[in-house]
Amino acid sequence: MRTWNFYTAKELSPQGWVRRQLEIQAEGLSGNLDKVWRDVRDSAWIGGDAEGWERVPYWLDGFIPLAYLLDNKDMIARARKYVDAILAQQKPSGWICPCDEEKIPGYDTWAVQLISKVLVVYYECSGDERIPEVLYRVLKNYYELLESKTISLFGWGKYRWFESFIAIDFIWERYREDWVVELAKIIKEQGADYAAMTELWKTPLNRWTFDTHIVNLGMMLKYEAVSCDILGADYTDVAERLMTVLKAYNGTPVGLFTGDECLSGLSPIQGTELCAVAEQMYAYEHLYAYTGDSKWAERLELLAFNALPATISDDMWTHQYLQMSNQIACERFPGKPVFRTNGGEAHLFGLEPNYGCCTANFNQAWPKFALSAFMHSGDTVLSAFPVPATLKADGLTVSLQTNYPFDNTFAYDVTSDKPVCLQVRVPSFAQNLRVNGQETIYSEVLSFEIPAGQPTHINVTFDTLPNLVERPHDLKCVQCGSLVFSLPVSYEKRMLEFERNGVERKFPYCDYEYLPTSPWNYAYASPFFKLEKRDMSDVPFSSEHPPVVLKAEVKRIPWGLEDGYASVCAKVPQSLIPLSEAETVELYPYGCAKLRMTELPLL
Image (tube, rainbow, N blue to C red; front, side, top):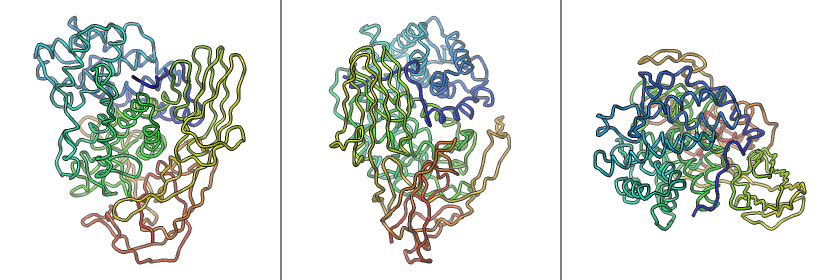
């Protein structure tokens, strides 16, 4: 049974830097895709002639909660316009995708799974009472098609079968009809068995497969958590076993797995697709809510505070398809890309570098993270991810003021009409824990009994210390709390405006190359670092004004370039013989350093 339940966008209001991050997203690509990108603006989902499979559902999956979290009336109306158009196309049979019914047997029903999930999100945000009946008909039709063997799962639908369970669980809670359980069983039986694939994950190949596709793997980590209850199966923490293999053979310093576009090993110059960041975050949200195990919460923070902002521009008008740990340039490859299966523009910041799925899908990451700030179970409320937010639900108001993860001070103000228990999750790296100024023995969860009608203020603080983390190839990375730090590489931007395949790149949604203008060939000369906090700018993860830095002692070394490439550092340094005396540099949070060296040797 699920340990914690999510609140809705009507109950949660982001504050502080999180709200600002969402505002930037709304002012950027996410909030404007329906105006500037043909695949959303003219999609077959709303009666147009452009792409009619995953891109509009992907976009709505983030645009909808973004609109409601910001209470943006214009965005809410635009979301409703799209949902209305989609519902208007639903057939009497229940079929809802923009595919003629006679073509259904050859149709990859990943789109059915995805739009069903999106409609659940829309209902939870809007309360639109049309949605349960619409989803009932969609899933009943899906069951009839599968049960009659008119269709079977293949392609993306087979490898993303568990995405169906967001809607299946939703319908099961409301209708409790036997066919819902039978649908769940059929989908599980026809879906890919990831537990049987682990040997494939140990040796990266320069070829594309569903079994090693990085987005599939990011999604699949939640499959047991979202499906075991309705299937009547025990929860066995299979995600931990699968993740252990993925991390050992493909792990990155920020909790990702390399995948450009399929698993790519442990090299710091291989990339990870942005879709995988968004989907892995969503998987961790469900894993933590289901299990209550803090390891998933800490892993989610690592992604949200590092991998996510690193691969999106400050104004959120452009993004990368791929990010790299050691990324000294984002420049078109004139010949063979360094990536295993992606093209030569995959690491540029742009509208749809390499492929447009991430253009639509990255939208879900920040809004859904914001929706995870508080969770609940019975009369207990949990501050799951202690970022600034206000919760108002059932006569309860909880306000949290903080700049976490850039600062570790948390001010809670709580009022409630009835007695309630407020719990605060404390990360494992917290040191010198204090509650209302008093030293407190570390506990994974702090509990506070809030009396009815009595305003209560709670102040929690702790310290975090920088430490070196071992990486493969005798390299190190620096982590302080949930923040990973990188040596930033200064750069100049080269703007690229052009049209290709009917898609226009025009400022501010054009493409950019980032060309380095400062040295990057360094090694750490000391294992000690000094933390300096700074004022928060209008851009929380600013590449120019980071809210916190580490002072580090470094020396230049003859690192060298990867053989055959002029804009990619070598996987490992050529030599550790210093080329200079020690100098002091500032390390930026990984999410602020768009060009960066993250994995360095220690002399």
